[in-house]
Image (tube, rainbow, N blue to C red; front, side):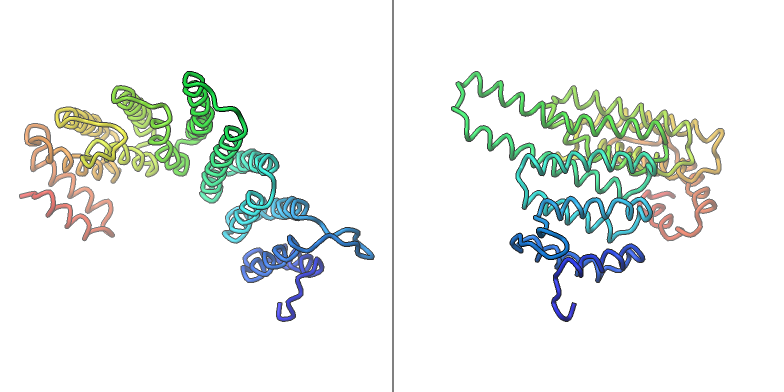
Length: 343
């Protein structure tokens, strides 16, 4: 490094070191410096190795080098970080069609990796990164195509725009279906639930969904998570997604993916409180049940009177159980008691 040796020999040395210890981030940094140098070095014969590899060869080899490391160390930040960098170089340095081929290959790869470890959050984060770039490349390809074609008539332009929208929608739709598949394979897949929550607003926008369509999707998602929660009420990841949906019910800032009137909010929250109370018959030792009952009671109090459904005695009882089941968060429960105004 001190001698600024950016040769292929140095690249091979970094390969040896990183194969032994992929956590050595300083070597990853040096490896990127070597690659950047080799990208711009003109091809010239060498006595032993023949022509210097061009950027496409180097980038393809780099992806191959990383693959066994990812398989062996699937949760090493530095390997994922380097793969991010390599793929960005592919987008910047290679032709559009070639770049799309590489990125499509990455989607297949990350699918296989998540098939082996469906809860690897590195893999899920990387999948979102790949999808985002594939969508960008797709838009770039369409823009380039439209610039070289004769401008269509008004009717044709509208139809073309619709077709483009459908193509873009396909990526989001397929990802949404993918989360469904992964969740049905493992209800406890927090990353899949999280990804699903991120996809819903985009999915609805791409569908150009009206208020009725948005409410329909919300009802379907609520039924989906209700079934999961009643299957395993002790699973934290399920409650997080349930909380996400119910937080959308309470939002009044205009940013929620679905709109509710106050009466609709009240009806929805009441229904969830009543349903969750039924869980207490068999799960009186589950903190998530009590926590959710208190959360939704607080939400309900902002839009309707709660005394007829939830009494002060109920609130005190639920809070008492929370203190017993999760004493480490006693200060949080103190804050809840104060905010709920429990007498």
